[in-house]
Image 1 (cartoon, rainbow, N blue to C red):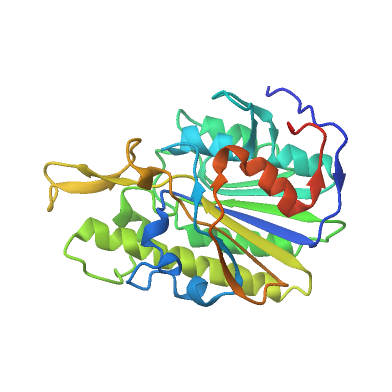
Image 2: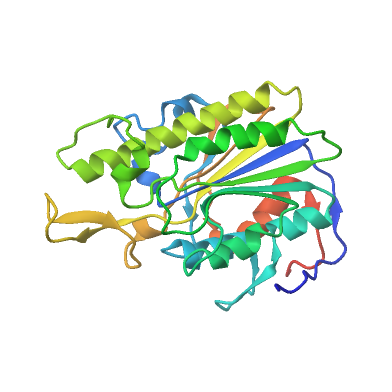
Length: 293
């Protein structure tokens, strides 16, 4: 029942044949070793060629607030956005074949704001019904992506993967994996290990894309960060949780790797999540007169 998009004068000159957008969950930029964290939480990314933005700010402190604004057209100077004019409907209008592969919910109180964007893809795959379902390992998205990549390709394609990533509770996200480090706080040790999992997943996707003989580009960002909050009853009396008062709730990773990347570049330019859709359009090589000046 969502309204139809109102994109106007859409043109496309994509540089690549396949685009993969990976949406991470609950990750702060400062815990990724590619951005300087002393434990090597992201060894693949730390050595990878690509562009790594070091000053990207998410528009909200939780998924329901932040992600729709990251993927949709925001109205400048307000907190409102047009969910019908989103990255998928824009890519559809530009002639892309679009896929939404999600390890978050297909519907429910916490999932609807994002699901109503995801369902606009031409192809959808959901590993979970709603937020309350038991945890599913993000790596189960990989065979789904492989099958999608192997479908006949006619024109440019956009694949969006929405991860559970580093969402609390952290230890459940490991799916039985051993923690990589013991930092004296079991929850924190699990949280850091989820970064290593993300790094490994990105490496597998990059290798998958590189084996297909098509040009490609991968873009990753996290929807929001977390901040340390008092939590009685835990071993340390505090824990990383959703919040709205610390910069760490908004300072998140953003990076791009492509089949033409040759150097590892850190870009310190400030980038706002409220203009992420314009950035995604530039990444995809799409222009439209609908964007505000």
